[in-house]
Length: 313
Length: 278
Image 1 (spheres, rainbow over the protein chains, first blue to last red):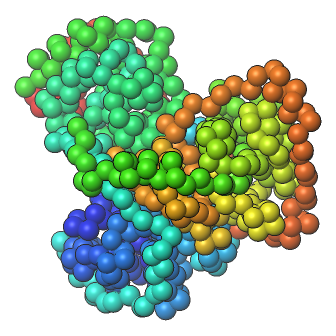
Image 2 (image 1 turned 120 degrees about the vertical axis):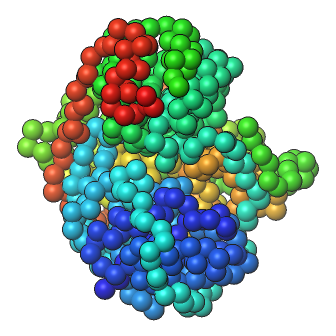
């Protein structure tokens, strides 16, 4: 019995969410295999083989797999499934994982289960619905489990101590004609990644403009924090969408979450309410964000935030 | 803030836009869900959430998918937009809304309310597959996720079933030339751009467009547009669930910790907890 994790990477480094997925997959109770597909997969596979708990690393290196388009990765996963007969095929719940896992599931006539936050047994999991307003425990009866795991719900697997055996993936027919990767614009930031940062400072509509976000950045830099935003701030065009924290954006669970000028719509709370400590700064004492905050500060953010930045060591 | 890693092809594709007209027939999946503004309550017996007597509407992301299809028709890139819904009798309501917002026809794959409550995205994708195979569509658009189950599965499941390319989390759709679409997608670290050859499956993200409102004259006109109902059983779809719900619970409630007087008290509290350097 073996569980497969499909690795996500940028052709150089393993994506952090794959380490969370490896921890989650480990809880299914089976031996762990990781599939690395890509144009530079061998190099990434070396990193994966050192991850604690990984028994086998399956490598599919092919120029056609550059950028890991789902139409091309799916046949490789299916060929591996044919050879190894995994009991579960899993990935992190990122845009990559959510694209590939259901596509493979369809080919196997399986109902996949998305964005799992807790593993109770090999066939029983918890996930959330309705923007986190309902927590649902489900049991899957499908022959093979096709799963994605929410990154922030599982600790990352340790890197360094593992010694997984690396082998080549079985041959697969990779049709390359129907989709093409043209390019990407990744937000370049010196700040810690939102999804993995220990501290996150987020700004909302209360900031009033994109330019005013500079006070958020200044506080974040003092704290070594990642920067997020509410959907309202994104919709208003203050910041790009990949900074959005919430049901339709990123789900974060840092040690400390500082919400600045954010009212606390259900949509936003769904993305941050698992943070260990929540601080809310807002001038409206009735803002719903204060109902989930450990420390509320009723103040004008344009005074309070620079004051805080200045007072911190 | 952005770094562009590949040369822009926009000049090239706008050139094609003038020369090549894609004549697409688009099927748009729309789901009837509890309205986004409703505060969700879990049933006391923990079997689900309360949906009776609660305002329902079209899944907001499906509205965006529909709007994009209608826009493509207005730009003469599509010839027909057909709305699809899988669900109990009341799903016909969201199909009428879709017709009022610009769909030409509607197809309702019917199941009982009890079956609808247990239906999984795989069953919906299978129904879409059957309709696509019967009526030869060139593209299927759906929302990136439904705001009830938050599964985000229907588009990639359908793409897998049909063996079509998939363009998920679309925030911009353009003519890609030679019977293809160029799609900008919201991914975790920013945006990427792909080209998918038609036929293809697309899922709409939040920023793709702003859906229009249905005007009264269009609501009246929609009543005369064709709405066809087909039972899921007639399509030969096996509705046996693969996932059973053991329990639906309220999320753990956080307790408000109360207010601090000022910034220095806040910093003192955070230092006490070891969250910021002393």
